[in-house]
Length: 250
Ligand SMILES: NC(=O)c1ccc[n+]([C@@H]2O[C@H](COP(=O)([O-])OP(=O)(O)OC[C@H]3O[C@@H](n4cnc5c(N)ncnc54)[C@H](OP(=O)(O)O)[C@@H]3O)[C@@H](O)[C@H]2O)c1
Image (tube, rainbow, N blue to C red):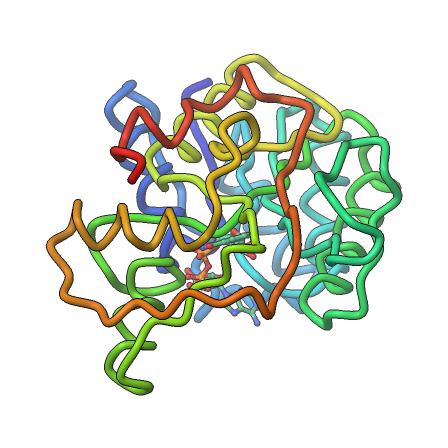
C-alpha cells in the first residue's frame, strides 16, 4: 500500500490515521471536498482516476451514495477499503453487549444513517471492511472526542454526570487509527467491532474518574444510573488494546 485516500481528513480521527500511515511511508491523499463535491459522482470518478489511490479509508461523513461510490471504485480496482461506522447502530434495546451477528437496531438518527452507509457499502463491495467504533478519546481535547465532551459538560452544566449503568464502547484514537491501518494493510473484509472496552467492561463513571485523574481535570463528577446500556462491541477483541493499557482503573 503506497497511496491511501482518506476522506474526512479535516475531522478528529482521520489525522491520527494519516499520521500513522505517513510514519509507514504511505502517501496520504485527502479528498478535497471544497473543490470535488462528494455529491457530484462524475467529478468524484474523475478525481479518483487522477489520484489513483491503492487503498481507501472512508472516515468522512456524507451521503450513503458517496459511501457506495467509494466502495464501488474499490471493488472495481480490487483495493482495500475501510469505512468507520459506529456503536450507535445499536441502542440499549435490545440490550448489549453487541455481537457482529446481532442485527443493528436503533431509532437514533445518526445510528440509522450509519446503518444505511453500511448497507450501501456492502451492496457495492462485499469485500470492504466496515469498522464499528465507540466513542473516541484523545489528549488533544477537541472535535468529536470524549474528553472534549466531558470538558464541555463541566463548563456548561457545572458537573459531569456519569452513569454507572452504562458500559460504553470506547477507545483511544491512536489505537483505533492503528487498527484501521492494519485492516487496510491486511486487506481485511467484513464487519469489525473495534472496542478497547470489550473485555474489561469499564463503567462510564469509572472511565470518567480515570480520565479526570489521568488528564488532570477538576470535574465535578455526579454518578447516577439513569442511562442503562452495556454498549460493548464484541468480536474483535484481539484488534484493540484494553483501556487499562492507557488508564489506571479506579
Ligand atoms: N469520534 C468519535 O468518537 C466517533 C465515534 C464513532 C464513529 N465515528 C466515525 O468515525 C469517523 C470519523 O469521526 P470524526 O470524529 O473524525 O468525525 P468529525 O470530526 O465529525 O469529522 C468528520 C469529517 O467528515 C467530513 N464531513 C463533514 N460533513 C460532511 C458532509 N456533509 N459530507 C461529506 N463529508 C463531510 C469533514 O472532513 P473534510 O472537510 O476533510 O471532508 C469532517 O471533518 C466518522 O465517520 C464518524 O461517524 C467517530
